[in-house]
Amino acid sequence: MITLRYHIVSITAVFLALAVGVVLGSTAISGRLLSGLSDEKNSLAQQVNDLQNDRNALNAKLTEADKFAASVGPLAVKDRLAERTVVIVTTADARPSDRDALTGLLKSASATVTGEIQLTDAFTDPSRGDQLRDLVARLQPAGSQLPTAADPGTRAGGLFGALLLLNPSNNQPQATADETASALAGLTNAGFVKATSGMKPAQLAIVLTGGAAIGDSAADRASTVARFATQLDRAGAGVVLAGANGSANGTGAIGVVRADTAATSILSTVDNSDTPAGQVVVVMALSEQLEGRSGRYGVAGNAEASSPGTAG
Image (spheres, rainbow, N blue to C red):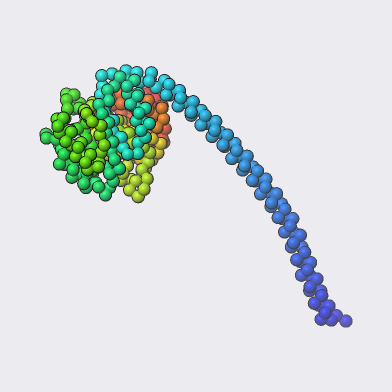
């Protein structure tokens, strides 16, 4: 006779069998899964190792290329700017080593550097834009005319053009020595610039900046430098805006310029001035400016060529 106890034992046996089956099955699956994951891990580790080796090899090649560019750079620019004068303008994030390298190449090109001026962080600070714009209007040299644009970068570019660059039509200063000294003193006292003593106007200018701007006001800061350099170019024989890695991005000054066809039609840009090769291109682009031509040079995606004369 089938009793209740028999039913209980039978049901218990069924569930026990199911439990044992699940355990055995999951153990087999887990083993296969773990084995597969282990193989995948080993494969990924090998890929990472291969990529690291490739990266090391590329870095070694870049180092050798930089050494070569640094060694032949002075020969490549020799006498390209003979009897020409150049003023150097740097932003707060520009690397001093890049400025020094460019100064050395300008000397190799037989150019004379008439002075250096640094734009401080305050110059590109949007919260001080109104102050800069008002100060520029008060410091305007007699007989000069500022651009009608309202943004501080363009307005400042108009003032600096009169102070730092010679008139391209007659090669004469556009402001008196006293006006230049007074304006630079006013800008310095307000914290917008730092200038070397004995600043003299030049025929050409290099505006040297860093990489992409960062922070909440990054786009505004980049725009101020871009518009400043563009307006500065309109005042003299030629200007090159040079920047480091990242400067051609959307929040980089060069990126802003390259997005404006009106600006790129007059202003030359070089987006890898933190490399020996890029520094040589800056001098070559400056020489090209004297011929009334401009270009977008460097290694970024929005560059047209690596250097003047190499456009495809």
